[in-house]
Amino acid sequence: MSDPVTILVDADACPVKEEIYRVAQRHRAHVRVVSNSPFRIPVSDRVKRVLVDDDFDAADNWIAENAGQRSVVITGDILLAERCIAAGAQVLAHNGKPFDAASIGSAVAVRAIMEDLRAGMDGIGGGPPPFSKADRSRFLQSLDSVLVKLGR
Image (tube, rainbow, N blue to C red; front, side, top):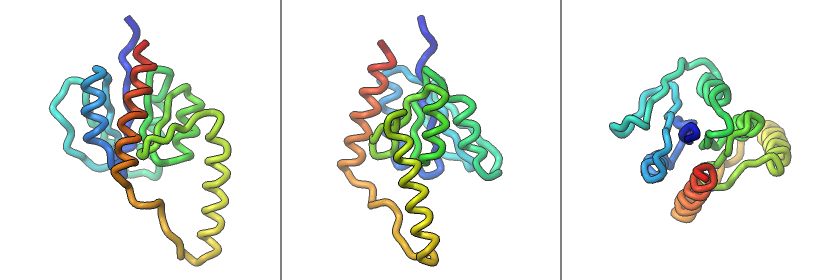
């Protein structure tokens, strides 16, 4: 039997933690909730909290160092997604959008362009659109599909 699938959650700004716990339980996947502040997690042998120090990128570094072929990384951080794809992990954004080798290059480029635009606007600008029910539903479907694929 192969190693269990582990879901690595970039937890500080993750709006779908409860959904991750439910889907992981159904697929008997392990979950590592990685953050620099404690979050309440379910009581389960499969779900563990990983507290990192508050150094810049400490959570990202832990996730990238532990990502691999049997991991699903949940993050909205494009640069972390790029590192995890390079490590062989499956990566999903909070809205269910998969990051993969074919799409990550353009996502990194768009991020850089947007960062430059925001810098030229003296801090004026918006963030991502509000998280919606459709985003939550798409995330649930995407996570389930990835776990089914890795379970084969």
